[in-house]
Image 1 (cartoon, rainbow, N blue to C red):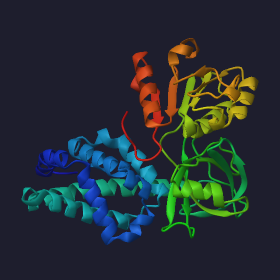
Image 2 (cartoon, rainbow, N blue to C red):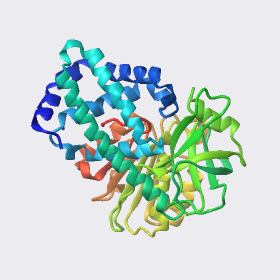
Image 3 (cartoon, helix red, strand yellow):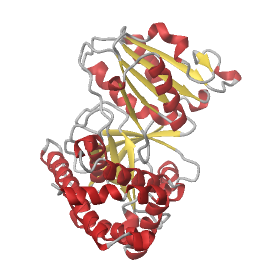
Image 4 (cartoon, one colour):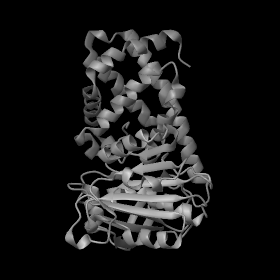
Length: 395
């Protein structure tokens, strides 16, 4: 625990942090990558260039300072970040590197305002936070390693099937090279891939939602081809059936938590349907008795992945209803969708079960609009569950 003097000192730096803003964490990353270039293989550099990761780190540091006297308020954030870290195989010694550059950044940007006392307080506070993460991450590593079919670090998998799902999304079915069992996952979690290829300047790690229910034999991920995305285009264009991939065990805190008698509504925009697919598959195979709703939005039929799979499931499960929105339907899409334009829940309000839990994923604008609509209908926060692809944000 931190003493009251340290807590007071940390809180006194909140105005300094707020005035520096994300520029502080951008400086931190530039400093760290200059002095420790090996860490470029840990971080998604696309998120650095877009500014998403520096903003996310700044928000995390600011939240830590604001809640330094009530760390229980950060439990959810710690859990989410710890799962992300295990996907990147973060090790305890790397926390020392991060701490060194964080303190140096505070001094370099804060100048004379950052006294030795402030640096000492932040060193204590960072040490406490690092110990929390190291402890929780070791728990996750150990749980994954000791579970049936589990492992630690990377394990070689073979692409057994590669299947085009839409103009932009391709699925990869991955089986362990050793032919053994694969560790179970909770629907909604993701898989991390470590890729080395001549086309990549560095080894890259990417995380993709598992898009099928757990089965103990293989995993399925469904990857969207991102414009300018090095790894997604590499997977689409150069990795074929029979190729090998290094896979890190499943992780993630965006998970299905539904009692058998609790209605579930799964809402997705674009490739945000991937974690919903594993949730839906589990609900149906586990005999979920309550009502299930599948609500999906995309641009048009060419980008509508898994349309036939969902239609087949809806036809064979009376408690499942599916509805689709096409934002810009084409002439050839007639009969393939229910509504045109943006997803408007007013159009299917009578289909939304009372007391349902809502899980949603997709582009940021889509998720903000979904949350707005649901909140206006009186759905409380405890029944709203969402996932960002990339650095986390608050809706």
